Structures are given as structure tokens and as C-alpha cells.
Image 1 (cartoon, rainbow, N blue to C red):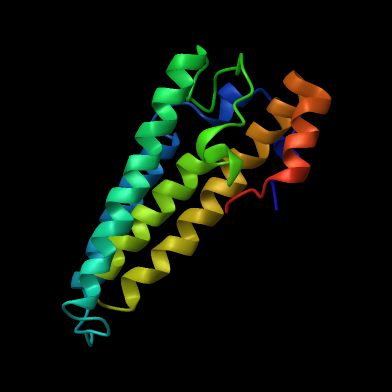
Image 2: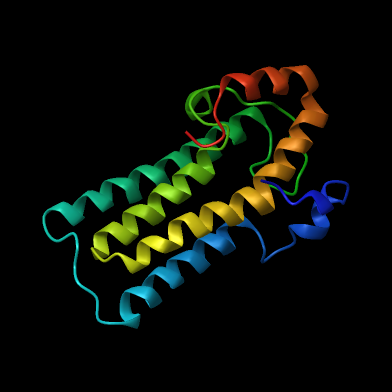
Length: 162
């Protein structure tokens, strides 16, 4: 659910650096490391199973880089506080309205899995909540305003995350 009280506000007021998604991704990575080291924990996923996390890390970051390339080719911005000039519905957008954020979440999940402990996994849903509450809802409102019926149609056909 989105924060209702900020709907009419200018996005730039809420998304000024460093409070952009990469900041929250870095904060989540640091949080995972801190939680991994915080207490003595039982390893719940050891080798070779925890190595699956590397596929999530590489896949998630790969999707984010691929989307950046798509945006550059279409001449639109990947930055959440800039106005989009093109509605992208191809590539990973066929499966997710937010493949960059889904990729970030997958990479975080992968990182937590490589550590093999339960406590670091708690960071992933917290990250998803922050991104959805602080960015996705505003971005979707902006895209709906900019692209109208085209975005509404896209939104009705493609899930927000996966």
C-alpha cells in the first residue's frame, strides 16, 4: 500500500539523493551483513545449497543492467524522480512492471542465502516494503498521468513484482 499523504506532492521532494533506490539497496546490504554478524546463529543453508544465492545475485543485477540498456535505447530515464518519456513494455517488463526493483530484491535474497542464516533474510521483505511504499506507488501514479490508457492497460496485464 502506498503512502496516501504524499500523492499530490512533487516527487523530487521525496526522492532526492541519497534517498534513491540504490541507497536503500546499499542500506539493505549493510543490514544483511550486520544481522549476519550480530549474534551466533545456526547455519540453515550450507554448501552447496547456499551457492544458489549467486545465481540470484547475478540474475538480479543482470536484469537491472539490461533494463538500464533498454531505457537508454528508448531515450527515457531509469531515475525514479525524472519524468519518463517512453513507456517500456518489452523485455523483462513483459513479466514485471518493476523488473529493476525485482532484480534488486532477488540480488538481496541471493546475498542473504549465500550467508546461509535466517536473520539476514528478514531484510528482503523490509526492502520490498520500502521500495513499494516510497517509490513504486509514486512512479505508477506518474506513469499513469503521463501515458494514460496505455499505462492502465499495461498495468492490468502485468504484475507489479513478478
